[in-house]
Image (tube, rainbow, N blue to C red; front, top):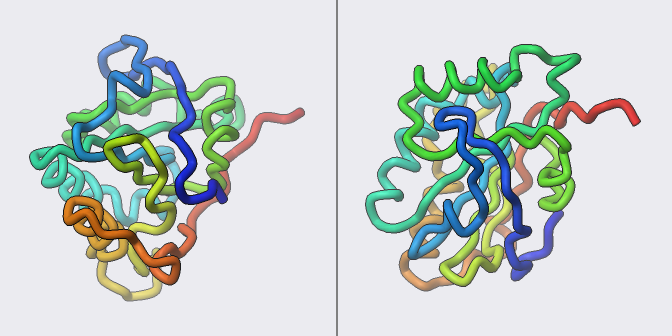
Amino acid sequence: MLELGTPAPEFELIDVVSGKKKGLQDVKGPKGTLVVFICNHCPYVIHIQEKWVELVHQYDEVGISTVAISSNDVENYPADRPEKMKERAEELGMDFPYLYDETQEVAKAYKAECTPDFFLFDENMQLVYRGQFDGSRPGNDVPVTGEALKNALDKLLEGRSIPEDQQRPSAGCGIKWKPQ
């Protein structure tokens, strides 16, 4: 996992909705930035996506921006192709960038392992949280609340640190790496 306190790795990727390149400085929020690795076909992402989009909209209003990145191999997982990403973003009302990491270098730089995978950076772009959305998983009957991420976002806004025991790794589908 990326170490807490690590500066956010730089990137410049195509936003599938606008068609424009977006870099880290373009998506940075005044109070914090949430970088999320997702994909279209993962049942774990599908399970939380509506609540997740609703939650991050609330925090965007108070200065924490969000950027979503898909790094999956689209040759073997065509549901994750950029045109399908654009459709999903529009369906969900994602008003934040949804970027395509074709080379998978950004996922590697962030040490992203699965979808969804959440990385929260403070206003200085230092990592303060990496982990799960909440304890809900497809089929476990735990309600989707976003509790773990919401707690981290609130602590960031309050200027408080997020304790190590609240840094629970995310669970989901492994990123679909291209054949070497």
